[in-house]
Amino acid sequence: MALSANDAFAAGGGRRRRRRPRRGALSEINVTPLVDVMLVLLIIFMISAPLLTAGVPVELPKTEAGAMQDVPDPITISIRADGRLYVGDNEVPFANLSPRLKEMASDSTRPIYVRADGKASYEIVARVMASLSTSGFTSINLITETGGPSSGAADKEEAAP
Image (cartoon, rainbow, N blue to C red; front, side, top):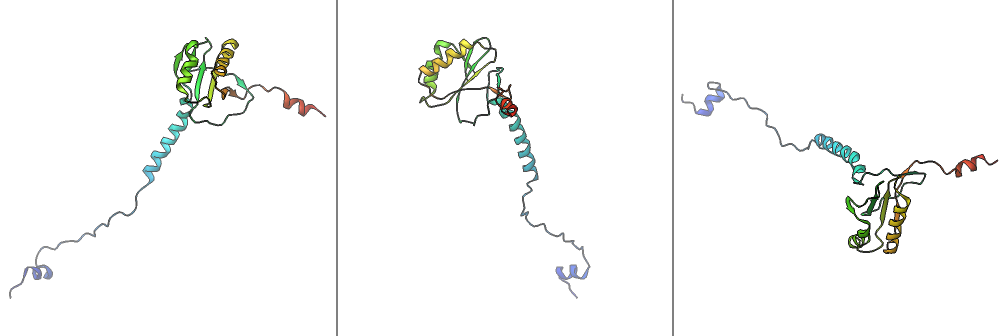
């Protein structure tokens, strides 16, 4: 009797192949590594974002004023304790301050933040503010740290019978 090749395997006379169950295509994406990376990036940005707001180190005076709302793309002028002026991170002489700001701002409604060191001379701060005002800028803000000493207005209200 003659057996075909298929019959030989079926009868057990040859090598038997084991069939492995075939893996199907993965239909789900494992998002755990993605979430881990995103959380690490979030923490990095939360820590580094406050450091990116101002490049010139100044010790701001503390006041009881509340925090301002964030304004997109303001011009920041920093006044150091020794009287040097910076627009952004670049040092600018006082004589070039007004022309430099007019060149940077397309209109005079763009907000300007003045960050003056607490030990800076009042004269220098007043001269900068006057220069900004005479140059046509209308939105000038002084930046301070919050949590300073109270003016005593709340204390007097509590003490009144």
